[in-house]
Amino acid sequence: MSKSKPFPAIHGGCFCGSTRYRLETAPLFNHACHCQDCNKHTGSVFACFTTIETEFITSFGKTPPKITTTVRPNGLVRHLATCGTCGTRLWASGDRSTVIADINTGTLDLPELMEPDVHEYIESKISWVLLPEGTKTCKGPFDYTKWWPKSSLKRLEAAIQRAQERKKLQVKVAQAESLDVEDEKEADKTPTAQTPDEKDEVAEDDEEFERRYLETEKALQERLEQLSLRLKVHEKVQGDDLRPGVVQAAKEPASESPSAEPKEVPAATVSEK
Image (cartoon, rainbow, N blue to C red; front, top):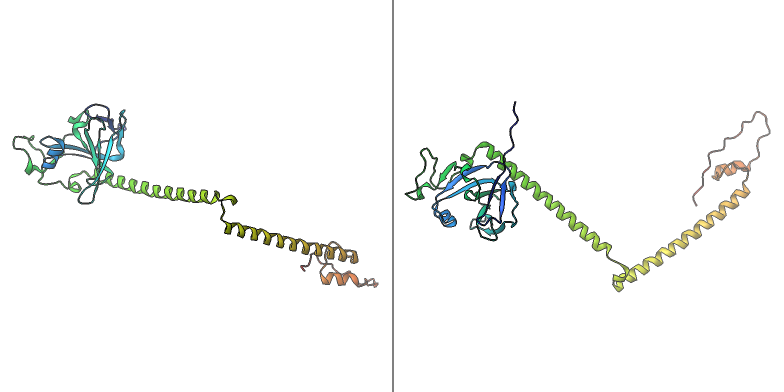
């Protein structure tokens, strides 16, 4: 079985040649529009568009495309890419979703490869524009859910999912950066930057710590002295086991009877005061 060949990158660009781009994969769909808005936008009698995932458009010219963002009356956000030098309209995204873009087919180096799959707003077509026999047409805008191939619809769903995952990742990164900034602010707090009230609180904390330290040291010293005295008195006790029962057993004389069994001395422990 022969392996499928990778899609050959198709290039395009503006009128002056300073802004160039390429398509990294096959388009999702091609269509022509005969509405009056497209006539005005393109300055022609109808417009042709090649639809592809926005992420698969790569700019490589010496002048990056200029992106202009507008909000349409229906609330959709539209991004228009043009050449910053000559103003050629290259593509736009956001008419359906920002994850896909409609490239102006005429800006492709080989526009003849992208024959429209359907001509929409056929009722507005200029009368002297003749379409080839068998051309698919529709009145008004075409419904992409009915006209697009199933493979293109699946690609659209995958593109939307990738966009959502990228957005979640961006939120996580922003949250992490925010936490880093807060940590840096806390780390930057030095004694020289403290307010008078904060200085007094720190001084009080230091005094309290010193007082508790001295009390603990004194208590430990007293315990050490008591243990030393008890060790001298009870030298017969093996190890350092100073529990009351063991100390009492050490004070009692051992039995002189041969049959008397030696008493078991428990393991050494130190009693808490």
